Length: 201
Image (cartoon, rainbow, N blue to C red; front, top):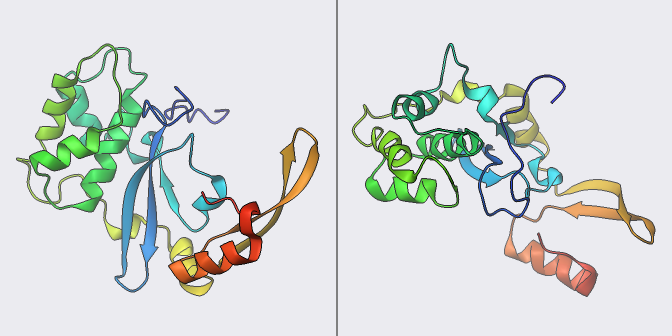
């Protein structure tokens, strides 16, 4: 906020409104590509972002050089008060990264979970539908946009335990350990080791 990066909004703080939507990208070393998904920042654990590239509405474009998703929302009058707009833009942005062309079902799925109280959904959906008729790959980032240092980090470390960090509870500080299993077998092993104390996020 002190840097003027204020696009991502906190609305319901329960993952219901979509105002805080950001796009997280994971690097897949085997496929040599990144995989984007829209997430609710208010619910996304910070430890889960280890090794991921996080894209916000402030980072994908500006008023002088907007991303196509931002541009279409503006041209189709898909924003009034603007509070929900960053989340809607980022939901659309994340979907554009997953496919070269959007189908009608993709558009509905992309906008699911983003609420708007004043604009109405018609102009927002009209903006999204422009990409169904657009040239394939419109709005899709080049793979070079995924940070090189994160690619190297993912390829070299593949860390499962991110270390111990103090957590706060009402009865005082406790040690919390974040594990990141990548297979069902690893999950079962952790559940067997920690039992009911293991919180699956």
